[in-house]
Image 1 (cartoon, helix red, strand yellow):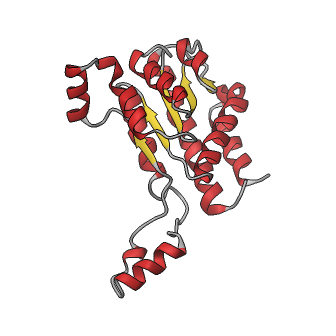
Image 2 (image 1 turned 45 degrees about the horizontal axis):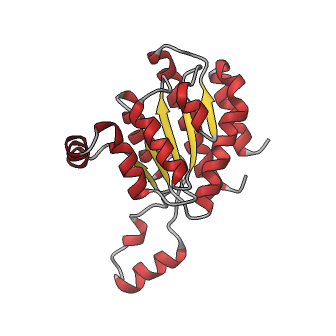
Length: 214
């Protein structure tokens, strides 16, 4: 069993209800891995608890989670050449570029006031997103208007789209390239399964880039 499969097996053992989501969870992982491998980035959006989850994911991807992440040697050499003896390269860690949408209140409030509140996430996606990037939309109902508009914008801009939410999936399920339908419908129960899924993704991605190839 390779490490990626082992991470999945551990997830399924701790949360047997997720067994039926295996194909979609793994497909979403491969979408993110391929994007990062090509130099892309991950944009993440949600509301309320899902917004907190978006920020949590960024924290796991932008720094070490379980493995040591040495910076690229070319960058380390540049640091040593430009700033000899300072050890800058030793205090930095390899990162997978991820951005949480909707966490800049100055921008969000300005766009809500000047244009339309339900389009603020979409505007950030338009500004940050590039073809080949991935948008991860978190919505327990699958019908959050600002998340739906962000996904629509992402698709038009050439991004791949992943949805993570409740069993029904709503409009989000219809719009995304991959949708992980967690086997719950009530908000707090969907949220209880959301964290272990994205933790598994973050562990898989870290292993793919710093632990081995899978």
